[in-house]
Image (cartoon, rainbow, N blue to C red; front, side):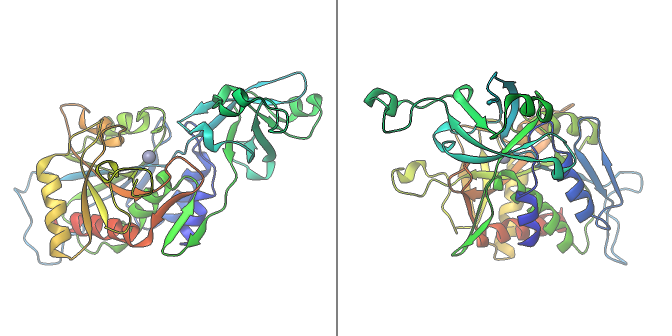
Length: 355
Ligand SMILES: [Zn+2]
């Protein structure tokens, strides 16, 4: 859980993934044969086959091993500074979709230096407008848009202008908690996937496939990193690892819950970006059964993952999405069950060992 905590408390919005990338680079030392950053910033980690000693080589001598690309996006939803007004209030442009109902009265971090957290500045974020005492009934019902929010840094405009620039990354401040059987934090979407990928690779003993594990950038603004990386990697099979909705809470009918917390790894049959390759889906299901790993099948009618980008790369890639059920997604209290997290890790490792 220490690694997960480091991952969720390291800032990295789309296009500003530098800190997370450095953290992952350190963590994966020794796990891969090569680790490189591509032109968009995705971290591409290659692990050649590790066949069992004495095992017969699969396929003809000339044929290359099956290449499996894993895609775990490392960006998180957040903001970029878009404007500093005459009184020193900072305005924002969203990168990724926060529900603005969850953005009231937040402590935030502005990161003027992409790489150096010691330059970070703490601020308080609220929508503009009147406090409850003097707000009209009409005001109270209104849900503000991101452009109505502002950050107060407690500094005069002159000082703010010296320290903050348009384009600086902004993230919310929120610690990770372990509550009951769950982990609660911001940006479990998608740092849990970074965790699942790293931990699954650590578990691997032998595998005949070549694994290219890509920690992708800019997923939250339209699967951009995965699109470029998939072209470069040219995989036979693409597996996105991501969070998915878990709406098994009051106020949502069962038919719309997508997944159930604690029921295991979610094998995604389809989402709005891709329909799973039936053979890959079938293989995941059978390794889960064989190894007695808890799983559930899920369909997400809206939203997509890096699978959507990988699938349409070059002449097409057989893709699948392994999802971790996540309650309260896109808030700072995203919640995952530890059993589901472990099931995702185990089923991924079991799949890679037999493909
Ligand atoms: Zn995601």
